Image (cartoon, rainbow, N blue to C red; front, side, top):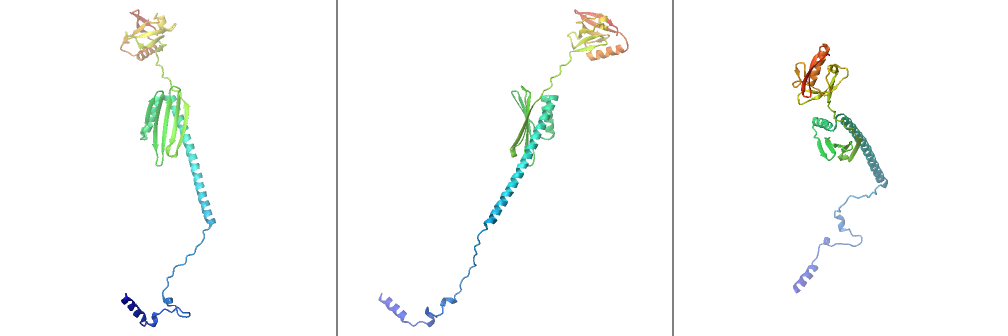
Length: 274
């Protein structure tokens, strides 16, 4: 400890160079004045223009309003097109169903979609028949759905664009054509009788009616007789239309024909003057 004190005292007693002292007396030069001083760029604060920001906000709002208006106009136009398409499809469905019937109309739509490379889905449950298909476009899909309700003869069409959430339907009624009743008889005025077109077990044709004062009535042929032969033509081997054509030819020639009939299971031959 003593040695440290003596060393410190000697250190302070040693003379120091004149330039080693820092003089802070008034008028003395500042020794720090020669040191380089770092400089920084001056930052100028400019307050934002509230009216500029307001004009930008209004411009953005107006742009959004214009885009929204265009979107609404576009969707309204699409709605009109979809509604018109539904009405058109319903008119097509009713027209073809009234003309062809349900099954033939479905077959027609199936042929059309097949040519377009589109699959037609058909479902049946209870009295409802439903069929549908899809048209695929680059940005959207159009779904077409058709349905019949046979118990009430109602039909329905739905046209839908799922991506735009647009769907329109149209309803109507159809009247499916009744199946034609095949003729059960044929009248031959040349010979003066009405014949059943259905062959009997004997292979002939039943005479349903004999025209008054006609050639058959004059020849004494009666209603209920079974015509089994005309001249040499056995009716077991001939169709009725061929026999009537033959009788018409003989009528044009004004030649008589021989008619063989069964009456009470007995064959009788009559000469009919045409």
